[in-house]
Image 1: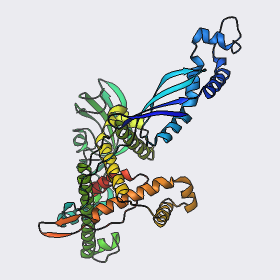
Image 2: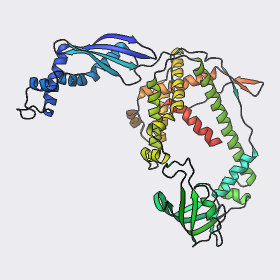
Image 3: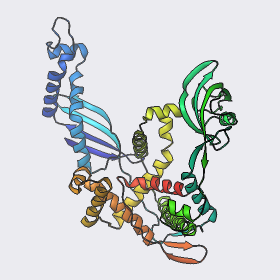
Image 4: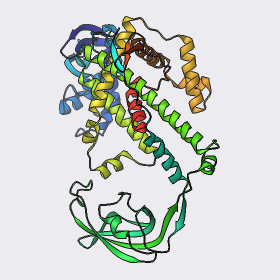
Length: 460
């Protein structure tokens, strides 16, 4: 391979031009003929026994030359990228400039590369930290949830009421025909939960165990299954059992039963402290996110579309893995939601854009501040992964990409650097340096933003 040129284009695209010598190309064409000739039929010859000249005359002189290009491209492209000293972030778009067994081949490739980043301010940034005071209503709500979890289900002899659990068989019909997914047996439905079509649960209320009756409803116009949206439906119901929940008294005995505390006041105090700690954690995380947003807003970079699309693909794969752990395939999920893969993937664009920009900004700070990951930090991270997955340390080392792990750790150190150099304003007057937090890296540092959102959702 001989690198002819490396030309920078707009939006972090690069055009490489490289050549493959005649001897290498001619040898590859011969190998392609031996391998592929069996596929072609030529009148007057047994299949696979026609001379090369006859096959090329019938199917085209460049037939095996293109096969040779396909065979030679990966290795020679990789060599061209290395010779050009570029960091590729997407798939190449190759084009044959010329090819012949006498002169070899010349290829032109357009490829997206990691963009150059021009950082704005990232030292001395100011951000406000707002820690909420604990609302006693939140404490009471948690106590209520604990009370609900520890309630006993008892059989109701009379009519079903809101809040009761009704065990039912049901089958749905539209225009007199049963529809897919509209049938179940011994389904436990909490009345008043709003988990079924509007109007369904209200019509179960007032019935007794043993009753058989119809429920008439109308599917919402925006219902995910298009064939049912806006349609009138009748459900045949058989009510097997009605149960209600008897809640325990909220007293010291309750505290002893559900916790390590002896009194209800001690339990509430523990919950109060837990909420406060969670709010503090959320406030710290928001400080971090706000600082990262400031750094990202101040930077300049021509980010190729391939980087955003690639991160979107990774987020889709992450989602697919999570639902597969619940026994659900992505195709089934998309069908249930009434979405195409393109529509589903597009939902991740904003998140992917933010994560890519964050990563680029932090990597630029790593380079500018010469931030490095020590071997001790790497070993500690490997140990953390080993402990989390109950694996041997050496096994983890054999599975992970050490360079990628060290890069992730360096990115996290860059985030800590920005925090250490920032001013955090609490309320209107108090100023103090941002507290350095020890974070655990994930497989990909970009998931930090996603994990943060999950934590915030839990606290709401």
